[in-house]
Image (tube, rainbow, N blue to C red; front, side, top):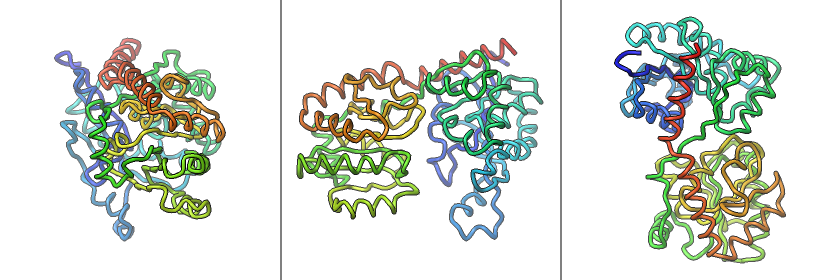
Length: 410
C-alpha cells in the first residue's frame, strides 16, 4: 500500500468489454464505486480464446477481435485469452484454465502495480485462479458469491470439489445475502469464519420512481398500452425463472380483469421459443409484450413504465432486478427463495409466495391490480427500504472494510 491507497486486483471472467458492454455490468459498478471509495483498482478479465476458423459465428468473432486491454470509466482492464472448455461437465477445469492463461499477464501487472489484495468475482473460475495467485504473491484473496453457489457446484462432483477447494482457501468470503452465507457453510464447513454479507448496490439516479406524466410518456415511447395495469418480469426467459407459471397467473388475471391488465416480458433466453409456443397454446397472442433482450441503459425505462413485477424464480441470490424495481417504487411479488426474503417485507414492500404457487401469485396480483392505492403504498415503502440498504456507496464502503480486515489477518 502506497500513499495510503489500497491496490486491488480484480479477477473476473465477466466484465464490460467494448464488444459486449452487458457483460459484468454489476461487477463493474462495484469496482467503479470501490475506486471512488479510495482504492486503486486494476481488472484482469479472461476472454475465451477464439481461433479465426470459429469467427463465422458472431460471438466467437467478437471474442477474437476483443482488445488486449482497455479502459472502462477510468478503470484499467486487461483481457488475456484462456481456453474455455464447452459444457457444464467441463466447468470444474475452468479455474485451472483461467489461472494458466492469466498468470503471465498478472506478473506484468504486478511489476508496475504491486497489488495488496485480490478480489475474485465468483467462486469458480475466478476464485480458483484468485487463490492460486494470492498464494504466489503472498496477498489475501477475497472471493465474492452473487448466487453462483446455488448453481455451479452442482454441475458435477469435480465442480463441487473445485468450489469447496476455493471456499476453504480464500482469505475472506463475501456473499450478497445471508442465505448464500448459509449455503457456503453447508457446502464447505471450513469456509473462513469471517463471511461478510454485502448486498449489491443500485443506481438510484437511473432507477427512480416515475410520476404519472413520465409513465404516460414512457408507455408511448415503448408501445405499452397506456390505460392498463401492467404486470412485468425483468429476467431471462428460462424455465427456472418461473416464466411458465407466470403465464398461468396472467391467464387467470386476464379472465378476471379482461383488457384491464397487460403483461410485459423484459429479457430473452434459451426457452424463448417454447415460451412463445405456450402463449399461442393459451390463446394469449397480442396480449403480451415481449421486449426481448434490452440494453442495460434501456432497462430503467421499461421498469418505470410498468406497475407490478412478478418474479417467480425457482432459486436466486439477491436479484438485481428486484432491487431495481423496488428503487423505481414498484411492488414486487416474488418467490421466497435465496436472499429475496431479506429484501422484501411480506405485505409491506411486496408479497412473498412459494415456488410454483400459482394460486398465491394470483391472489397477491389480484389485490394489487384492484387497488392503485395499495400499489402506491407498497411501492413507496419499497423505494424507501431499498434506498436505505442497497446503495453502491454502502456496498463499496463495506468491501473496503473487508479488504482491510483481510490484509490485517494475512
